[in-house]
Length: 121
Image 1: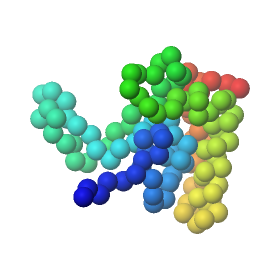
Image 2: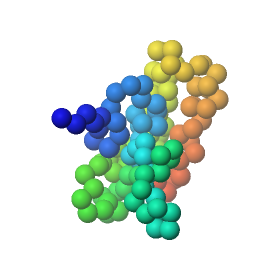
Image 3: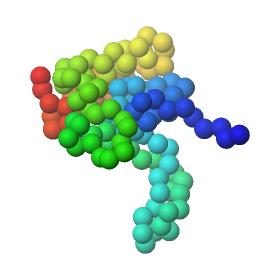
């Protein structure tokens, strides 16, 4: 029997403390990475993780990609920002992040996402 983490519909691991980046994703985040040609091709890159971006909309989705698109997850930029901030506020209320970190890091963070990925309003 293999023991592997369960994944949500965005390809992110379930369990543990879910940071806002994982709870309100723009990518699938994995704790491993594979080396490219010229650098031990195919070997694991032990201390590096990877982010595999979600497609912006159904037209940009690759064949076989079962994950939802950004447009499907977040109908508007305002929706994305609100969900991200709510996830951060929940972590603060549960004592997993400090209020100062929430104010200075997590609350402004979702506004830095490119409008090309999640357009206004």
